[in-house]
Length: 257
Ligand code: MF3
Ligand code: CO
Ligand code: CO
Image (cartoon, rainbow, N blue to C red; front, side):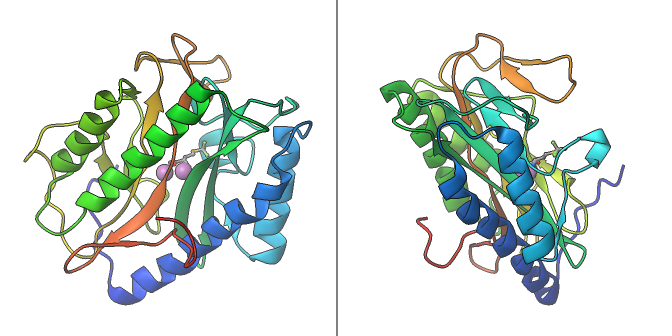
């Protein structure tokens, strides 16, 4: 394991922006395909073809530590790392699609929630809280802030909304590697942990549950679910620390914050 944090040069960050914008473009492309009756395997196939044929990129999940597909699809009480399969989407489902591409050796990693048909009040709530939790983290990012400050802000926000934050999975450094140092926890204590410096690149990707925070790993050894089967939501961006703040590499120009 390489525990050093790789500080990126401005040119390297520009290369990561290309990968990041490409990953974001996959989420935009797939939007219109997320509808009642489609299977998550079909979504995987469409994304795979777009990434390879249109973007000339590599889908990072495929064969990553044995992961069998090109994207992760996490439905309802699935927290993360759901494997696309023959489950058809139903009205009322909430679905996280997590896209990681490799372009020119650099990774871009982003995910968001999609509603299938009309979401329940609870479903909408957990998706919105997870989104706000990500934004709360991003707004903290600048040199001198610690990862503990960021985790604490995310946790305080989400728990204040009577939701819980998953502990077993976290954000991560990213660059030439998919998962680099440091680990970016979505909980923590102010002032603790790594101090942010310009040129650090990492993801923030809080997993927020409507019920308790505890998770269970299914026998497929990938799919993570909430132990209490409550709904779970996650949003993710890849970002770089700048001299005075943050540069979100996976945010498209005309995207909401
Ligand atoms: N994209 C996920 C993340 O945000 C990791 C997926 S690993 C995989 O870190 F193997 F499941 F693809
Ligand atoms: Co990630
Ligand atoms: Co991801």
